[in-house]
Image (tube, rainbow, N blue to C red; front, side):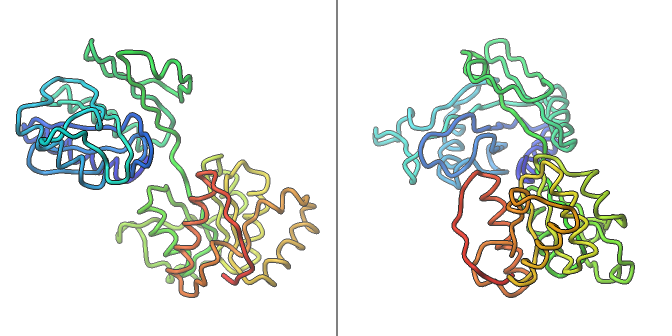
Length: 329
């Protein structure tokens, strides 16, 4: 789930509340170098727009189709690439890819109730599947993640799976943790932060009143144990062993997909030695910790470090192996 999906659904609900008819497009499949992932959303009332499925070209073509009276079916599939441009050539994305879209024409209270349920499920952060039966014009929700690809591709049925929300667990108030929290939230992560140092309370400047998050004043080990899942990243950003080490110890016992710790090469080496000595962590466990944290882009300022951190953990989440070099974070 991303913040973009939430924004599109909220805007769609607002349009429906105004009595408008809208078209909602979901990416079902991509082929080649498509710029948006499966599940990305785009909505329009024929004039205004929300979201993106291509970066601009498909959106323009789709609105032009609506102006010609196309896509008046309640549910339909559009393979962008099979349609023809006015000059008779096949539509093609600038990147050379193709996109298959589910197109929903929505209006009225029933549609609004469906989008309300969809939005609520996304906000809960639990995995579910949205299933659509095209001929019967049926939309329904299934608990869990249905991964059977044969089932996914059954004719006349579209299933889009929404996994548990990806989560950032930040250890310690700092200028870096604030920038990581801001970028993480913008990238669609659920962000949580803990600290035990009351003297740092005035240093947190991104609370709910600024559109940010509250600090959870609790033991970092319990914090990680309570919130860490396979969709979580644990980031030690306090520059204080009392916070960082405790959280990382719990992180090593968790299924978190990413563990990272801020500090110089020397500081990182000392931390690994402590973790090995104090909690008897194995070499394979310690190898999970990205330290110094983030990609080696020469980052110095808090925002630069945050960019390096988000870039690295997104790459890890996507299963991309990046070559690292010695650097200071």
